[in-house]
Length: 272
Length: 272
Image (cartoon, rainbow over all chains, first blue to last red; front, side, top):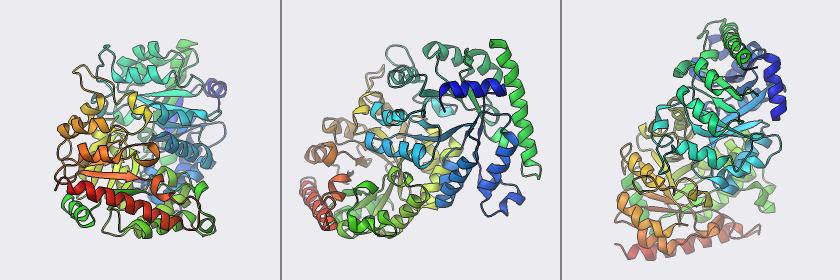
C-alpha cells in the first residue's frame, strides 16, 4: 500500500488506529482454545469485529515464533485474512548485515506479503537499506520506543546535544523518504512529539504504548498529527483483551476499537 | 551448556570455531535440492563433515524465516541433529519490550532448545533482561558488528569520549555475568580487540566476519584470546560454500573447518 492509499483509508474511516494482533496463547477464551488453529481463530474474530474501526493491523512476530512452525502458519493465515484495504505491519524489529537483512525483507515482503516491517537501527545503513528496495513496501524504524529501556541508549545525549534517537532519525531520513520510511515513537513520551515533528514533519509515526503501557492518545494527537495525519496509533492488549476470556471477547474488542476510533475522529477534526 | 562445559569442549577439540549454518536455498548443490527437505539435508551433511573441528553451530534465523513454516521446521530438525557436545546459537538479533522479549526467549530457549541467542541492545535493559532469566542459557549481545553500518551508530563517540558500543557493553555487564552474557564483536575491527578485552576481560566474544567479510583470524586471536580462550570465531560462507555446488561440498566444508581448527590450535598454544 502506498502513502496516498493509506491517507485515503484514514480519511474514509476517520481513524488512524492500528490493532496489534499479539495473541498470547495463554490468554485465549475457552471456545477459541478448542479450535484446530486457536491463534488464527482468535485473530479472525478480532479482525471481523475491528476492521471497520481501524486502518492497520500489526502482528508482533514474537507471539507467533513462540509457537514454532504452527505459529508461522497461523501468521500466514492471519495475513491472508486481513482485508486488502488495511495496511499490514510485521512487528519484527529485525536488522542484520546486508545480505541477511535482504533475506528478512524477503521473508516479510515476499514469502509473506506485509506492507511494512519494523526494523532496529543499531547495525546502521546496510542493515536497513535492503528493506527499502521494495516498491510500495515500508520500513518502520525504531526511534524512541515505549519501554523503560528507551532511557538506556535511545535517550543518551550525543556530543552535539541531541539524543541518540534524533541522530538515528536524521541519518535514516537520508536512506528513505516519507513514502517508504516511518518511525516508531512510543506514546509514553508525549512531550517528545513536538520535537519529533520538527525533525520529521512529513513522516508517518507508528505509535505503540497507549492502553496497557499507559500512553496518552490526546497528547500524542495534539503534538503528533500533521496535515496528512502522519500517525498510526497502535493498541494491542487494550483491544484484543478488552473482554478478557469471556464469550463476548470479539464484541468487546470491537467496542474498544470503536471507542478509540471515535476519539481519533474528534482529533482529526481539529487539524483538517 | 554452561561456561565450564564450553571451555572444556574448546580444550578438548583445540578449537573455538563456530560454523554458521546460513543455508541459502539458491546456492544448494543439485543433489541436495532434490531432497524432501533440502535445507535440513544440506545442514546434516555439513554437520557430519565439520563436527569434529568446531565447538559451536550458529544458524542465522533469517535464512530459515525466508522459507516460512517449512524453514522453521528445517531449523528445528537441524537443531535436533546437532550433537549435545556442541554449543548452539540462534543468530536472531531479537529485542522488544519486556513481555515480548520474554516470548522470543521462550521461542529460542523452550520451543527450540538453543544454548544462546543473539540480542540487539537498542531498546535497553528490559528488552535484554528476559533472555537472562534462563538457567544455562546465554545472551550474546550485539556490541560492535562486522558490517560497514557499524560506523553509523555503534562507533558514535559519546560525550565521555567512549564509543556507543562501549557504553552498551559496560551497561550490559551490570545485567548479566560472564556466565550468561557474551558480546558480538566483528573480526573486521581487529584493532579494537585490545580495548574490548580491557572493558570485558572475562566475557566470551562471538566473532563473525572472518572469511567472506574479510576479517583477520590472527589479529583477533592475538588481541582477543584470554586464559579461558574467551572467543567463538564464526565462519559461515567460508565453510559451507567452500566446495561451491560441487558433489564434494561436504568434504570441502570439512576441510575448510579443519584448516581453521588447525590455525586456532596453533593460536591456543601461544596463550596456554
